[in-house]
Length: 393
Image 1 (cartoon, rainbow, N blue to C red):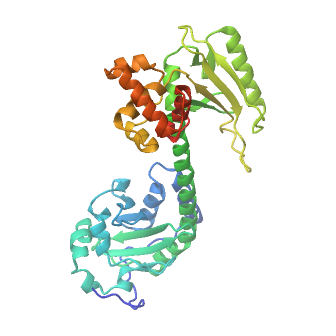
Image 2: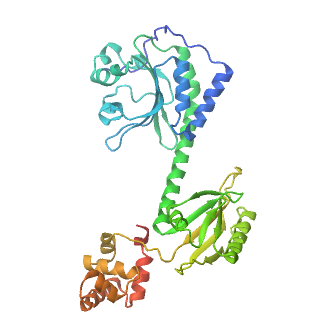
Image 3: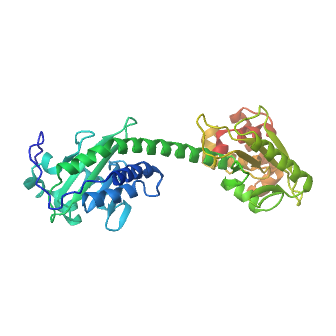
């Protein structure tokens, strides 16, 4: 399949000449591009508009080309609206056959300018992936952001139409800088969301419940651990979209701490406010810490996290994998199992019953554990295990 070294062909005049956009239409299209990172199907709205304005049958944004390590990520607008496309074209094999790649960065070209049409229409890629989708003419541009994101815009027309005009190319070239900035914003938002998910998962594994409140004291979100504690409806609960303690005196103190945190937005005290909450069943008291959420340097959105409450249940135990404890401290399987039982509060006698072995065997395992971990007391061993990275596994 031959590739032309430089554009040579003049586009064939289109039967459906694109109508020049009004200022309002162009402005709406630009707005849709910047709204794209916030949509459930990113840039779905912009692609639908672009498809309509360009008289195309498909408008596609390839956010991530396929590679040997991962599938492609495509957003495609057709007759049924925008969708994330997961058909054969997203496979690495298809991408490896695509001749319309490596385009001049930030420049709009047609496939007929880059490749001899009679040759590529007889090729495997065209017959297997292009023709079945009723595609003949392709307008495209490759975008590379400063952060290294490699995106591709592709707009297509069927065989019943003709090639894209210079007016079509000019419209897309006017859109490229805006699309490039929007992709950069999307990448940064995705990075922030990834970090948030990482920290949220870490809090879950450390068995710390979190409840986030807005500036009016309304609950914005909770994590999995907080949901489990609050679902028990013992000691602390959410009612009227606020956090309350069961006993009046503790409830007043909790409301005072919340009011203090909400009245000082962004001002993080040197020593956070904390209290304990009694449970009617007599189980261990819940630890509750309340603090305001720091403001960003340029924060201006009113509906934002303003305070966070951390809840810790002393009776909840972590359950790190036995294999992790073995590798972390060089223990045998039996020793790791015993160490986990002791960390979860069992005595040596209880551990012997749980494991169905003699107490002398338990003592022998414990001596070996002490030698391998460098501790001499059971309480120190428990502290070592609970403060290790195993607690966040």
